[in-house]
Amino acid sequence: MENTKYLTVGALTKYLKYKFDQDPYLTRVFLKGELSNVKHHTSGHIFFALKDGSSVIRAIMFSRYANGMKFKPEEGQSVLIEGRVSIFESSGQYQIYAEKMEMDGIGLLFEQLEKDKKQLAEQGYFSKEHKKLLPKYPKTVTIVSSETGAAIKDMLTTLSRRYPLVEVTVINTLMQGTKSRQAVIDNLEHADALENDVVILARGGGSIEDLWTFNEKEVALKVFDMKTPVITGIGHETDTTLVDYISDMRAPTPTAAAEMAVPDQRDIMERLIQAQNFISDRIFRKLDVGRNQLDALSSYYKLKNPDLLYDQQAEKLVTLKDGLDDKMQQSIRERHYRLSALKEGVKYNTPEPAIRRSLEILDDRKSRLDRSMTIRTNESKHNLTRMVESLNSLSPTNVLLRGYSYTTGGGGIIKDAADLQPGDEVQTTFARGSIVSKVTEVNEDDRNQK
Image 1 (cartoon, rainbow, N blue to C red):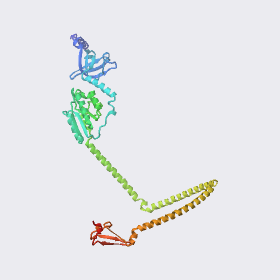
Image 2: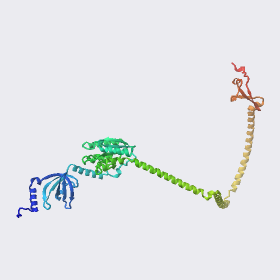
Image 3: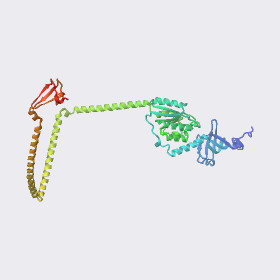
Image 4: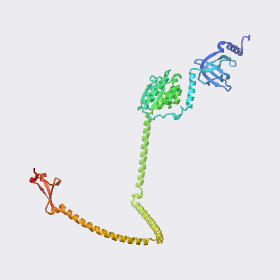
């Protein structure tokens, strides 16, 4: 059999490589796709695969090209690549040798997102100290979301089921598209002006393009400036947007955001029952302690025999009294000794001569004062006698003693017969005693008539 017509694997690979290298359509190729299996070698070379929805091609970028790149290639990035396609002889696989690489579309957005995230983090926007506390029992909740989405129904159901007392306001908002950024900013401002207790910013799942509004820096800064606490629930659990980093609370889903906003009425009831049981237990314990103390006191032997308490206190009183007497006697003795010492000191500076002279002056002045007082007293007695005689001459009693009387009735003295009517009762007072009489006839003095 003739073997000359059979090629070796190496010969075929060299031939194919030659064809690839000579083909003008393969020497300058422009590809777009998603990076996969990215490996950064210590030499500076980058090994990776480029894939789309149906195919994969191996790729390599040598360090001389990789060193000039403006970003670091990572898994999942969408990129645009310029290079040449050839065959690696050792493995016989064709691959693209990338010479230029740049972010494609959403990839550029991701690059900008990373810059914004880094900048905001360095400026402290993500710090916990800026996070506002959520009220434990909110009265009002505002939801900024689309009324047509399935997420809003789940949130309303969750809020009603967990905490029926809460009042919910829904602000219908465009959540994706070119006009969604300004719509979200405007409606967040409107929600903040309502001064409700909590604002929920939420939308259901979607592609990264659908959720990109919430990666906009302007939207994140608006969330930061909100006076009302904001809970974000954007997309699914694996989706994390820029507003999630800056909001006061991040929920993995819109439904979870509703759960974070309000307490569960079942938990509240359970805590109330626990509190009631705790209070009842403390009361019963207190009663048991008081009952035990009462039993102990009622069986105390001194209470059964009160004389023992009196005897002890009486004995204690005697002891205290004796101690007080001893201290008083001791104090008196000490003061007596001090007084004796003072007397001894006074003898050398006695004021006795001055006192005798003062006593003589005092006796003289006392004698003159006694004489003056006697004269003044006699004069006062004489004046008093004259005044008493004058008063006696005007006294109503003396008038009565001369045979006069006065009559009273109606609460006062009767001065005019015209003040009385037949049948009135009057009282007549004499010098000794009085009488009560009834008027039978009234005669008026003609002198009083005109």
